[in-house]
Length: 158
Image (tube, rainbow, N blue to C red; front, side, top):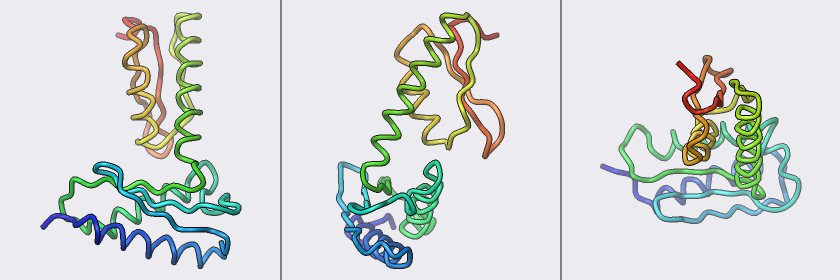
């Protein structure tokens, strides 16, 4: 049996309310919405730094937890994203900017440029962002949690 979106939204709301209360985020408002095949659960308002965590580690952990609780090993077409005060959009913008800078540097100097380690979803975003350029190639190297993306001039990697 697949996951029902109403059940998933309710579970995510309950999880975020519990975490918000436990962290003492009194001013936080829980917002849960469905966008196509994605359920976005977000905390809005106040200082969300504690919930986001260093380099997004806490929010990524909460997202992983939400997926485990909602799906419980069952198949689903749904995707779950946990956000706080627009962090995911800001992070995606910053990653695209870093990717473009790394691509420009790789082309300027004709060599590989390694980006900082990032989680799989962020590496995927960068791979997809740079794929359409045609003048650079990307690949991932290393092992988690230090797995990182490398940008090189197209045709420059053997």
